[in-house]
Amino acid sequence: MSKGLRAPVHFRTMFRNEDEFQAAVAHALRTRGHTVRREVRVRTGSRLDFLATKNGVRMGIEAKFGRGLERDLVKSERLARLPEVDKMYVCGPKAFMSEDVQALASQRGVGLVALRDDGRLEWLSQPRKLMPARLSLGGGYRYVIEPGEKATYNTTVFNSGDKAAVDIEVHMVIAPPFVARFPSKTRAKRDFLDGNDKWTNPLECDVRQGTKPGKYALLISMTAANLPREDEKAEYEIRG
Image (tube, rainbow, N blue to C red; front, side, top):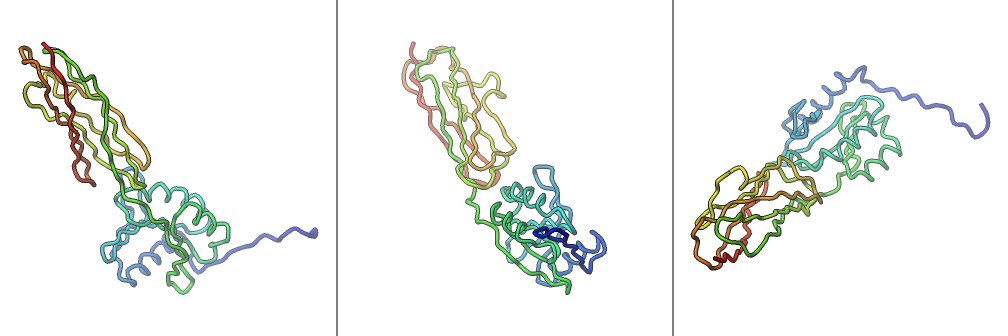
């Protein structure tokens, strides 16, 4: 072999196939006191190889026997933002935990755990701590309107956290002099809003004919499955 060229490295482990490896991972987790579920579907349509829970902490784990840990690290970075998991790890045989794999795990912020040939887990690195989802509600609207016209509010929802917000709804709380001739236009829903992302959507209702001139407030509400409700007041001046 030419000088400077490195001979290929052949890794060998005690695990003969993927099923045997994953069974050993599940056993090792349960031995450490985790409640373990396998093939867990999450909101994005993906599946977690394992969802391991202990002391209220939910760990998602992608377990790969053999090559392909780099691909799972990229996938796990996305899965870590879901509310179904508190931490995200990739697990593989100890023999495959190369310097490149460990460097990529650090860069992607994903934890790394190795299954040793003796069947025990070795926690090599912890995942990056992600900030919880944090939604803010704002918007723009035409301030001056007349009876019989539409009151519009262009909502903007921004998630300033790292984790995703899910099952988000914005809606107008309809009360006189505002009326909802088409209720579907007074509310909007979104299943998923990733961290550091925003969503804009127009809402509208009508102003009742014969409304006396004056200033009237319209309540705009935002809810999400994993966050508290937030309300915003829009004040309109109705002129006759």
